[in-house]
Image 1 (cartoon, rainbow, N blue to C red):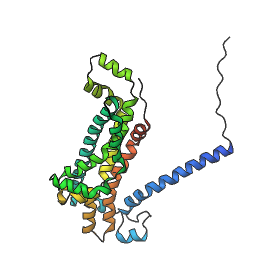
Image 2: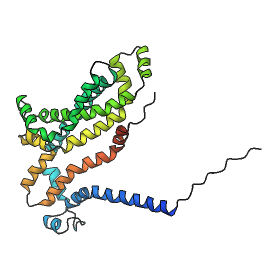
Image 3: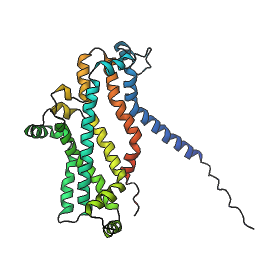
Image 4: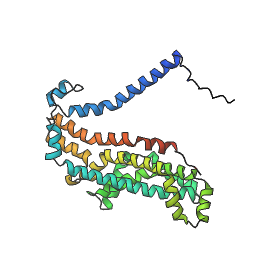
Length: 288
């Protein structure tokens, strides 16, 4: 006679565990509110006039002024600036992912003298943010004749984004078993074929994380376009806020609406793709 396995009952949580769990959730809710409060305030402020905004900056609008948003979408250069931001974001992400993938492959799978020393020297770029290099960047861009061009903004973003992206991808590439590489070569795959058909598909979590991080960085970049772009027709949305604020200096409701149209897509994109960041930066799962 066979006996059925007994059902395992979930152990009851002690009062201390309940309070600890409640405390953790309370802290997470509080931190989430602190992070999202500026976004919510900007969105709600976009539906107010200037007087109501200063009187009740965090309250619900008494009357939702939809014209603050519709006037921006219809009667301003918003769409041109949106296209400029999209061009900068696309150029930065594509070039950063491409070159960092190739560099990570070289530093992880190819053996040559001084490889580790060269990689350590290469990653020193992580110690220097772009904000402290504006003067040499401006001089270099001017000498290359790239002032007032999209590439004058894209190339510095790529240069300062490659070291971190290469560091992330190198860890993924090194985690792939050597036996898998040997099997690919036995099946007739060459070096580039192994990189394209084996490494890149297995490193999709890391590639997704780099894509998301570079997209948000390029979308929110302000000082570099301000330094490089003098032609207002090439301004991205971040500079468009400055232009719009100059036109409507007294109408802060419209300015807040413009700010909302800038930050809400970035926040929504991050919330939808944050799992790629978590998976990519924690290593994911690579099975040999």
